[in-house]
Length: 197
Image 1: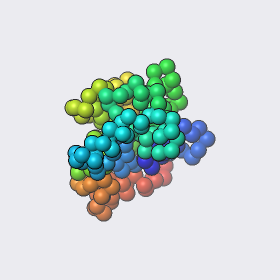
Image 2 (image 1 turned 180 degrees about the vertical axis):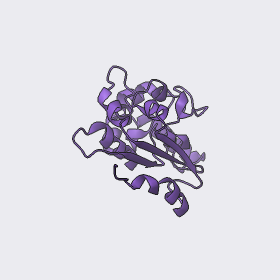
Image 3 (image 1 turned 135 degrees about the vertical axis):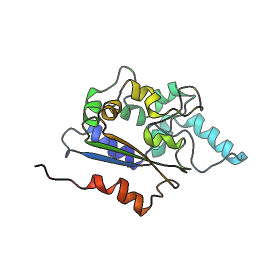
């Protein structure tokens, strides 16, 4: 969830220091559809049903931070009405879209989105790239370019991508299990600020 908080700083804060490069490791940018590491056993089915039935309640939203980015694709109306964080961050709420969020986010010099190929925490793992399920279904997983967030450019992701400033990176491993060589290759270059000539 640190990825989302960092992105919120970029989108929401007017007077903060400028962010040039935003590097995201396994961020649930388009949401996550289920509790991680549960599986399909009887206990998990019950836990999943409880989560889905109460996740957008005022109580859960006020007391459980991950509820702010759980997005049940078959319950989009309740998600948009009850989820307190991600719909605002992603400018998803019709009639409440904030042009400043898009302007600030699309001002990034580079957006590095790192997805882990064997991620068992984020469901689907493609949320790391803003990919997600279509509204109303758990299948198929749409690549970011086929989502409404991208196509209607609610936060400036399409503008960044069209300008060649989005790096969609896929690395081996489970959630946040990045190797030193992948860190040197995909992260370190964006931490170095080259002086202007």
